[in-house]
Image (cartoon, rainbow, N blue to C red; front, side):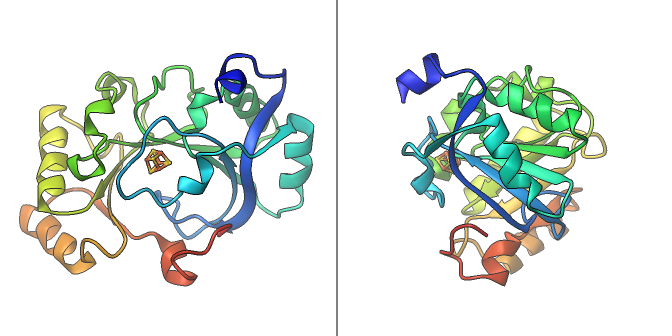
Length: 224
Ligand code: SF4
């Protein structure tokens, strides 16, 4: 891993998987989307559903990645992980995809400095909540680095996580009109109806986010 992170071959990335599916975790949920999942993560969230991305995958050149994604009839690409901002060459890929007029989403855990992500790409940035076991790894400065249109996501496991998320929104004065806020649930841990009731009771301007791919397909299915 260190070798890859420090001395990557030019124009290559370690890829876990590339697939075409339905966007499920942003305000663009429901749209067809090409996913590029990068290998490795420097967090270990207690409820992580993509631990298979922690290990090395396949090193592909940018040209090989382009050939793979061109097969799919969509102009929307999400770069995810693992943690996609761990690999230095991700910025080159983002630039390339933007030059080719793809709409680019970057899903990041919030522990990496986001300031190098081009503003033409849209960030969907997690703020880790207490039940993840990784909330002390949030880079608090990232909340000031968000650009208009970037989205903020909280994955909630219980009421404590919900209250934590509410306190972050209030203390950091997040404006959901500038940065849409997504409240998602840890699958099968927090009931959608409980979260819906809390959001309605508090009159929050947040979006209850359902992981669509886990509803459409089997929750354990990879590549969707
Ligand atoms: S940041 Fe994402 S990939 Fe990394 S451990 Fe947490 S949930 Fe898993």
